[in-house]
Length: 607
Image 1 (cartoon, rainbow, N blue to C red):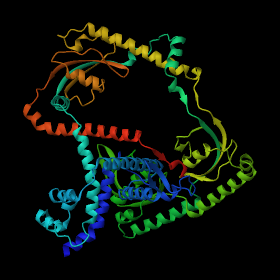
Image 2 (cartoon, one colour; image 1 turned 135 degrees about the horizontal axis):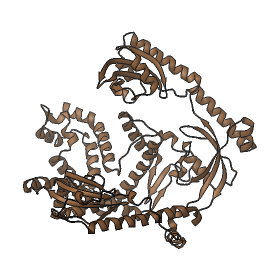
Image 3 (cartoon, rainbow, N blue to C red; image 1 turned 90 degrees about the vertical axis):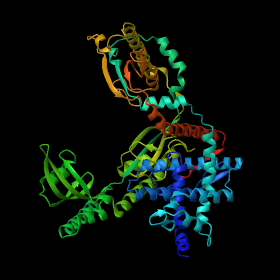
Image 4 (cartoon, helix red, strand yellow; image 1 turned 30 degrees about the vertical axis):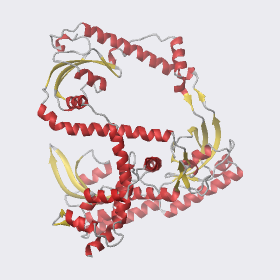
């Protein structure tokens, strides 16, 4: 009964762990970051409460929030910082997860791949999940006890196995899909051998690289007709989407003198505590705003001069061993520093120290006043006119000449999707927005212009096209130089002896290298790898174009294939290549499902 009670108590915990693993394993790209989900939505939307729809399957705001909250908690537990870019990533990734899982689940239903009761029991009996094997209730003397596990599995006392059953019911169909995808993968023995040659065989090579600098100062005529022809053939590259222009007044969130004074008083109190006998490490773990200091007790390890910002460095190096100094003001905030040791290493002074950092942030009173000022301006701007309100209240009007509808950030303001939505609404030019907020502050916008979608005229891109065509001609000339050199090569002499010393060829020897690594000067490319694989000892490749340079390679020697090693590595190589191919097929399959799906993304009108 004690075992049953333990299992029941842990069942919810099991389910949450499984949910986390399941989300992370099935989400393309994984989820990182965090967001204050209460700020993600406004009260008005065309589809109230619905983030999006995939083939009639709705994603509710409540579910969206749960996923974000889960990832936010994971991110916080990892001690990582949450910023605007992180919030953007998590929104995109949660949405992508919903699309992928919905489409896959629908395919599971079409294929009849749902897990049966028999499959769940068989799976749990013959393939105990690792998370269960690691639970103390199924272990004897620290080791998984299969018989104990079976006894509990086959003698349930209630609903303690229900969360595990539900997880199996969700995961088994995905395993069936994965197995189905894997069956479409074909891998030949020659592919395994080629991968072995790239990763295990050692090559001794000589290379001559013909850099673009050979021809960089050469001049080539580019005719008007060539430029016109290129422009017409590549006109799509010069298409500009419709953009909008905005004026705005910005109210930046920044700490006041009172905020700074409050932080100074707090960190002074912390210094008194540690100088009075409290553990510096313990106080740092509790109070420091340095994320790494939360787990290390503020430990900075050893550092030399030039590694810290000047005020911090000066205080640390001037302090005595064992001394606590500060508060020190830097661009990060206020610090107190404990110098734990000093030494001279390689003739240079070093310090071992801990620190406690308190950031200087805007306090509630500062934020309330800022928002009040911003609201007052917003009311006047809407009642009396944007520019009149700015003039009368003494605010500077800034201008953004071009904003794309697909943008997430505004220059200087950060992430403001509501502002972009306002810019592309049906409101006429000269309309004034309501007060809007971002991480950096508050802003009020005026729509000042609509720039229609258009192709850049040829005169605007003339110089760009000229430069591109001129570069192509220079690279073509470089190819001629490389080919002329190649035609005069003797295979019987080392390449190094055949270089014209007046020319700035780049000659390199590469000893005991593998082809999955980049070659010095030459770089790395599939064409280069394939060309080297085809060589016999003493062979020389024709010039190989890699970006804007050419490379000639001579194979001096290569290590023999070790049949015993090849046999031993074959399974690992096969598994790696199959995983790569499977992932590629899986991604293509998902994309095909997306192409044929009815997807409505409602996120843009929920901000």
